[in-house]
Image (cartoon, rainbow, N blue to C red; front, side, top):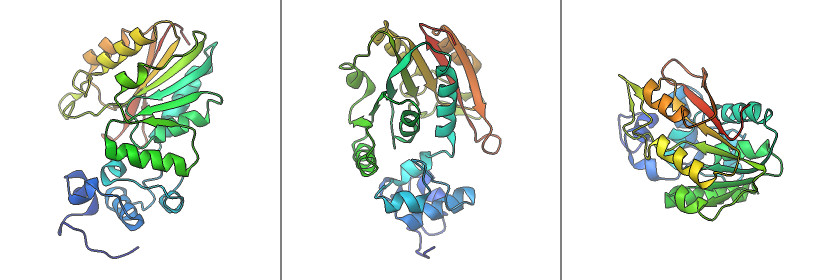
Length: 260
């Protein structure tokens, strides 16, 4: 581990990235990835993506911005995949398309696509800086995932799926101010609101069986969650206890056009 000084003296590396330090929008060196992992989780290998520890993915040419490293949540992508796989096994359909509406690093889509052979994988990332790095990273890994620099509405406008094929959509928009200590995550205030996203999918793919996986905090406001779940034929919330209390995530799964 190298001993470089941090740009903002007196702040640990995790605080620099979280509080908007200069490194948030910079491409991190390997020692910085390790240092962030140690500062935030006492583990130099915390930022493990695409199934690899930092030294391995860095050696393959994968690079991350500081703010992308902060958003990497250990093992959550694997849990997303496991939840979707368990639900998918009960569906009488082949998976035609996997979409990540807010792709970021593409890590979740990478894991999902590994377990649905023959499916097409498409991700949408509006941030041009994140998009360029993700596109380069997936190319370095020779991944077939197609990442587009557009919003999900525009991106999906030209997408079609055979009527007898299942569409799996992963939904994880920015939370913004939607998460509070008092009320948990309020799905009405994500950017955009979860119900708005689900309504768009249901309208755009009305003739397809659909499976939606929505990333939430372990504490989620009940009324907005019920409002979203009411749009599906079947739904179930799974919370993954991978981290200390208050730092965990969950996945509400919802289906339309079929029931597991």
